[in-house]
Image (cartoon, rainbow, N blue to C red; front, side):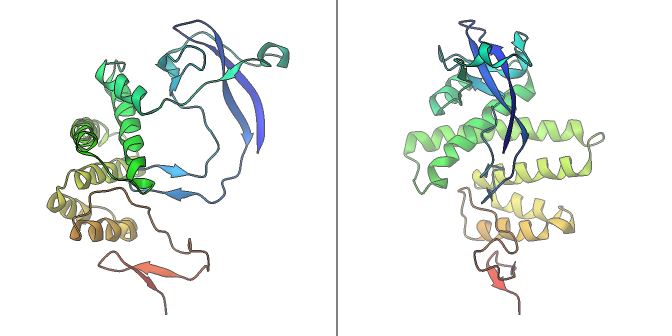
Length: 237
């Protein structure tokens, strides 16, 4: 991993400097992908929905005009790195209307969704209040994403459209709308069959929680396997 010169931003709340980490190159090791689009094992990229390390203000980085690039080390040596928001920050962001555009609301609610999913992703379970928050956020995020799909269908590349369709499928599965998911899976291209079988298997079990996406040859022994019609792993002969 090779670092590049960081970018200095200035907090819109306290005006103190903070650093965005930049990379010249990096390698991903031991990455894992999940049904909600979360991916582990990547470098610590500075998030667009970020938090000031000095005063705790939360903001969208792309809205900050006050920044400085290619600064000498003596200017940023004692600056703190821009922080990642935590669950309470994401809840506050969506409840207080930090987002000013549909895309920003999608981003904020996606961050909240994935952060809540971390509870079950890491082996925990939802309490009743957390479950309600998760479901309400899924409902609102689903509506936004479905509107987004209508807007991009004629202009976006096919991969972007299919990725958004998969996100919508996962949100519907999270809400227990399994029949709709099974129907939507039939409309995905054949290249997505390996993933569709995994979603279908979860629907048949009425499993609403996030799951780790399985790829061929990602097991330690390197054995080849495929995902059968029940969404289960089967070794190739």
